[in-house]
Length: 352
Image (cartoon, rainbow, N blue to C red):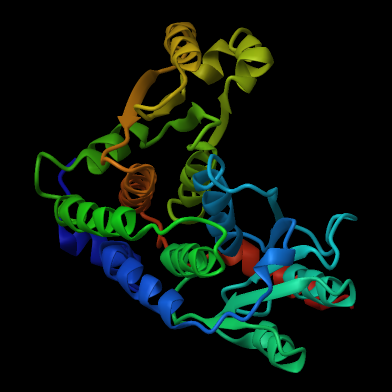
C-alpha cells in the first residue's frame, strides 16, 4: 500500500505521528527529569515495591518490573485497582503513577497507601495526585502534559528508572540509556518515512491490515512489550489484538488452535523475539510456530535490536508503536481519541 505523510496527516490531526517520531527526544527529556527530581525516601527500609496505575501510566511500571526482574532484589508488582494488596505497609515503596493525576482508581490507591503509612513516590503532570503529594509531603515527579498517556511512555518509565538508581536499588544504567537513545534516533528516522522500502513496521502493518493480530512472546523480558503491542493496536488503530506468553500458553491456549478454523484464517500471528530467550523456550517457540502456521493466515517474527536489554526492549516498543500508527491510517481511524473510554468515564462520573 502506497502511503504518504499527507495520508497520515489527513487522519491524524492531533499528531500521534509526531509524538511517536519524537519519542527519542522524550526519552532524553525524561532522563533529565529523573536526574533533577528531589526524592527523599528511606530506601533501606523498603522490602517490596508496588506501582499503582492504569493504562498508559501502568505500562511503564510493567516494563520497569520486567526490565529489572533479574537485578532487583526485592519483590515488585504493578497494581491496577482501587485498593492495594494486604501486604502493603511501612516497608513498602508505593509508586503512584497517573499521567493526568486524576485517575480515580489510582487516587483511591494513593489514599490507601497513605493510610497504611507506606513510603510514597508520585509521578504525574499534576491533578489530584500532585495535590495529595503536596498535602502529605510526598516526593512528586512532575512530567510534561499535553500528550495522550500512551504517548508519554518515556515519561512514565525513565524518571522512575533514574529514581531507582538514586535510591540505590539498582546499579547505574547510564551506558544502557545512552545506547537506547542512540538506537531509537537511528530507527525512528527510518520508521517515520512511509516511502522507504526498509520501513519494517509499515510492512508488518500492511500484513496485519484486515486481520486479527495474535501476539506471542516469552515471559522473560517481553511480557510487558507484548501487552504494549496489543494496547497500542486497540487504542491507536482501533483494532482488536490478542496474545499470550510462552511457556504458559503451551500449557493451555495452544490446544485452542483446533476448532474455529474459519476464524483462524483471519488471524495473523506475530512472534516477538529476543536473542537471550531461554534455549528450551526458544525450542517451544519454534514448535508453536509450526503448529499455528497450519491454521493462521500468516505468521511473522519481529526480532529485537540492540546490545543491552533496555535498548532491545525499547526497540520493539518503538517498532510496534509505528505498526499501530500505520494500521490506524490504513483503517482510516484517528489514532488519538479514545471515545469509548471517555464515554465510560462520563457514565461512571454520574454515579458517586
